[in-house]
Image (tube, helix red, strand yellow):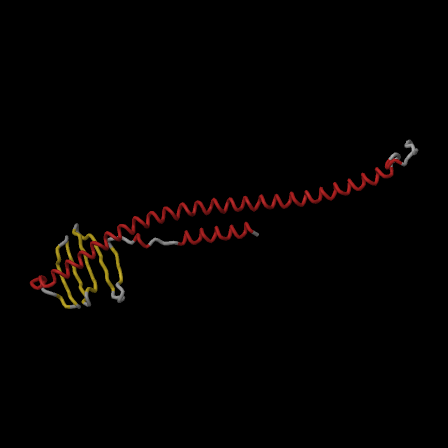
Length: 189
């Protein structure tokens, strides 16, 4: 009973460990996030014709910004769906800098998340191996317990036989001449 409980817990732990999915492995180049207000924020970084293209769609201070950059230079800006002419981009320099800084922090966090995700996967792999070893040991323990039960049953049978033999030997000893000091060959004085 106890070994079944242990095996069940080990199996459950193995299932839980193998079912973890590591979401930190999302590519930095195609990372989508959502803010607390459930407005869609996204950052997509692709390479096209040898150029690095970044597209940012985000809600920032109650406004929706769409920014496109090619090789690090802004090529288009929309605020709340309205396309802003490049001559007016200067009005948005501060907020664009804040958005870029947030993207930088998000990239750094994504890298840390990927590194942690890799460590988590490695640990999950080690945990799976250990869970397998534990299950094998539990099976061995269960087999040993079964053998010990069988041996205990055999010992009980043997003890009963030994007791019966001892009873027969006592009966035989009582029937033998000279037993108990009253048979022929003993003298009473």
